[in-house]
Length: 86
Image 1 (tube, rainbow, N blue to C red):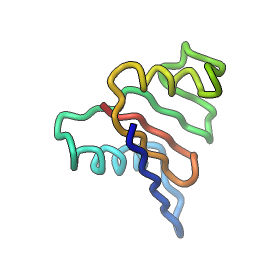
Image 2 (image 1 turned 45 degrees about the vertical axis):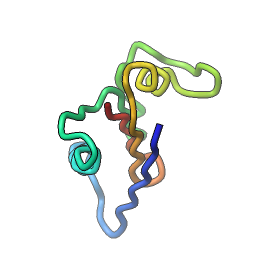
Image 3 (image 1 turned 135 degrees about the horizontal axis):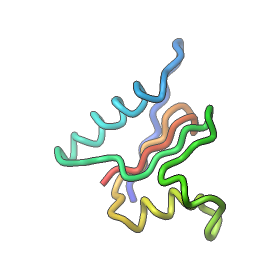
Image 4 (image 1 turned 45 degrees about the horizontal axis):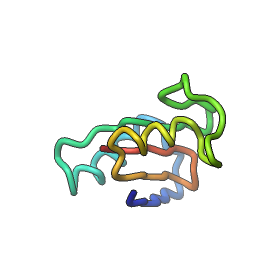
């Protein structure tokens, strides 16, 4: 899976803004892309949320994304927000 790290400094960024930025970057390679897994560090929430815990050192939501068509992982601000796109 390809990984991209995005750093935005000098301003607070919301979850919605981070997802929009990630979506725009992901669409450069695939116009039909969609976020299939996500993590929000501030609220300690993830989607799909039913997959708690680790599997082989990775979070359940991340393993789900990898195994369900994830091709691109975008991390924003050092892990504040993480998205896996198809």
